Length: 97
Image (tube, rainbow, N blue to C red; front, side, top):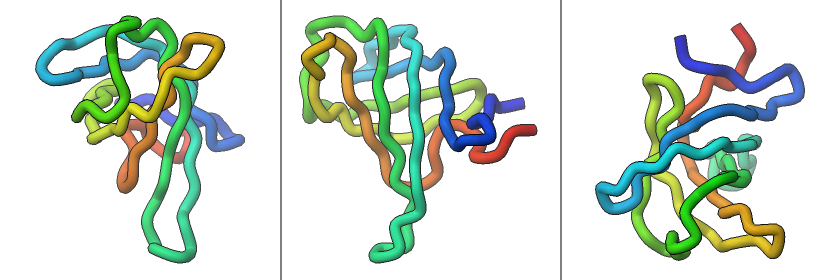
C-alpha cells in the first residue's frame, strides 16, 4: 500500500530521493493541486535531510513506498530544506485509504 495524503491533501512522511543514481533517505512534506489552465496535477513541497551538496536543476526521482515520480530540485530555502516540485501523478496517493 502506498502512503497517502491526509484529509487536507498534505503528504508528510518518509521518501527516497534519487539524484543521478545517488539515493538518500529524506522526509518530505508535499501538497498539490489540479491546474485548470494546463489540466495537469502540480505538486511541490520540502525535502528534509537532503544532503547539502544537492543543487537545483539536477534530474531526480522521488520514491514513496512503491511509487516513484520525476521531481525537480527547485532551490534550497533559507531554513535549509530542499524545495522540490513535480507535474503529473505524485509519488503518493491523493486520498487517504
